[in-house]
Amino acid sequence: MIDIQDVSVTFAGPDGPLAAVDSVSLHVPEGSIQGIIGFSGAGKSTLLRTINLLERPTRGRVVVDGTDLLSLTDQQLRTTRHNIGMVFQHFNLLNNLTAQQNVELSLKFAGVGTVERRRRAAEALDIVDLADKAKSYPASLSGGQKQRVGIARALASRPRVLLCDEPTSAVDPRTTASVLQYLSDVNAQLGITLVIVTHEMNVIKAIADNVAVMEAGRVVERFDLAELDRPGFVPTTEIGRYLIADDIRLDRAPERSRA
Image 1 (tube, rainbow, N blue to C red):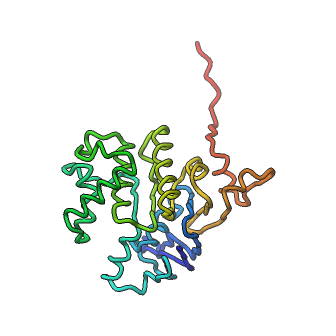
Image 2: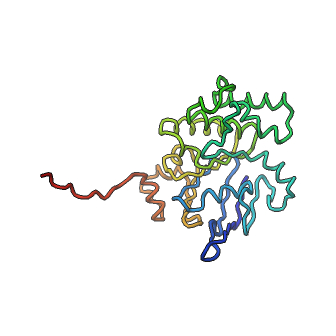
Image 3: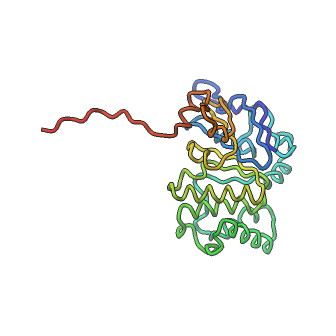
């Protein structure tokens, strides 16, 4: 479904070229949920954005559903992007538009007629259980509801692939579970292939089939999440082991004596 082949993304830095993504190859099977995890600056969001060419690779190939995206004209790429939805970290909703109008917006830009885009927007909001919030403005919605509007907006174009960039980092832990459940349902019920970038291993454990661990622009380890249940399984890399542990340890200073 998705084939990232020897992809690099290089930016100009003060001390010379900086490889945000360095020679990464990754295959994502159709209908699967692929997790990409790493610390800040690992290159995971940049890699995600190459899948719809929001970030154009300096080198390599990006093939989605059999199409080499780098070989497309601008018009062909715009058409292909209708099949690749995206859910953003910070919702990116327009405050002066209702939930339904926010969902409709990308369809309007794509030239979808008024009746059809309203029907699709209503259908997408219903999938994420927000039909009753269609006429609500973002200011009246909770963080979780805003993210669900973001998911509905991505679904309205009826994509085959859904890219999720830190979809739970701006919501509380209880809402995280709700957002992940909707994404899981979208995968199971609609057959949409998901790629989820996060720095939270508990998100990956909850939803992904496979995980790619990134460090310094490279994929340093990959494994099937089912392996976590195998007795004795230990990631081979230090960062993989750290992320799997998924806890916080503090070096606490000794308590000062009280006078």
